[in-house]
Length: 250
Length: 373
Image 1 (cartoon, chains in turn yellow, red):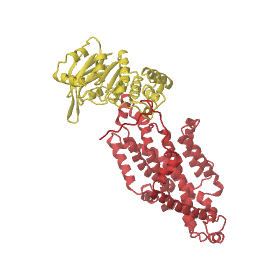
Image 2: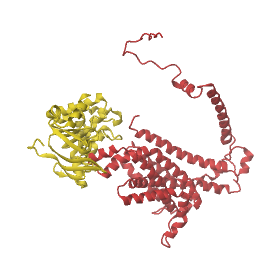
Image 3: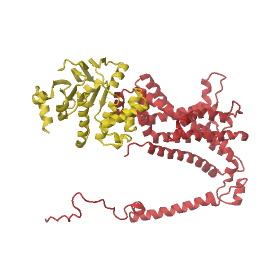
Image 4: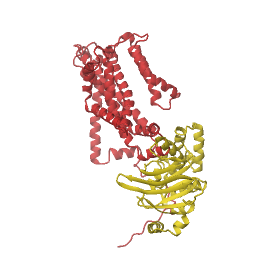
């Protein structure tokens, strides 16, 4: 992409995916350098969520290659688990484990996947819960928290695996307006700390502030990608212009 | 039309305090009024049924307790003393109801096994038991300890399984069935959801076959036909065959209840587990089963209660469970005709066991509830 100097941590070439007969992703080419922040936007059904879900193999691509941190994603289970432990993901509906406390949600994967001793995992979890400003809720269950708090816990849970890359799949779309800011603040802080991030979102203010690149997708294709300033001020493609005029008008 | 002025505000905006609810809408009086005396017809019905209930309770207490006879040597003897229940039939035969024909000198063994059963259950059923991790080892060893105590061998005199009967037999079949069917049922439920076609086919056929056949038929198979399939000359204990059949039968039902619980889990849970790098078995043990079993508790207890009561069916292949003992007692000329007393007594035993299971499951549901609805 634009930073040719940095080594790519994600390298997607000629990638296609179908859901049954439906061609959801068409010839996707995307490279992301370490510490880069990429925001992906586009109308619903444009394939943006599917694209980031292919990166940690929640969806399987059918053609082309995806290389994450030097490991190519094939059907090989070892590679998939390897990549998943390096790639954190935050979901639209949080997907916290309701039968575990906030702290247990955060220590589960470090203990069972990374084999971290319990006391170290708990110390780490408390540190990240502190970072997302929710440490006082550590012993509560997810059902006792608000949506914004749950999403911050979900971010902490991913960070506890100390991933190299964080994927965000519409992290604020299921939240009440007053809770969006507290989640975005955490994401901004994370971006400024140098985390590699791929964010599917409609929050254009966030894109403008922290993104290195903004990607616009429509109909399963990457229509346009550019630095945020050029992307917002001077969109090239007609569909991008239409999308931006619709999303920025309200 | 004239607009009416709103009444003046008693408090400035944003300052309205919480006021107590209207009189008689909360508390005992409020409950009585809402549920029993809410209208004239409801009040009439309440009084009518209260009257019936009192009549019934008074008559029941008379028959069960006040006019009942405990000390007599036959039905005729009972009738000479009082016209209530003749509990003497139970009093004289209570040991048979409890142990069947288990030799009197060895009865301390099932007694000890019974006490140890509770010692084994506590750490499994109550998660705050002190030293739980170590005590659970005892629970896991209990089937062997209990089996050894009751059957004998290794220094104890062997008591043949034909001598077992009464509540002892019910407990052996019921407890074994419950604790064997749970793990088998969980594995069947997981197998039915498996991505591997062969495993799925095996599990589905197994479940559908066992659910499609009455337990009585399986017990007949256990008592007669199994001999045809086994190599000539092998004798396979009838009670063991019954235990296997009852456990498998119950496991098919358990499997379907657990499958319902597994299917209630949202796909996002698996996606989150996948995204964190958890493998299939770790996801199953840490995410799927804890949630699936929790929502399955009512259905599971339903299965277990039904299994426990179905143990009375062993009577058809000649095992003497409490009802079988009861029938034998009724055949005795001295006690002929006292079926009400005998069956009430058996019913009380089953009711206590099943009610205890039911209450435990309610407590457990509350204990595990984390959704705070």
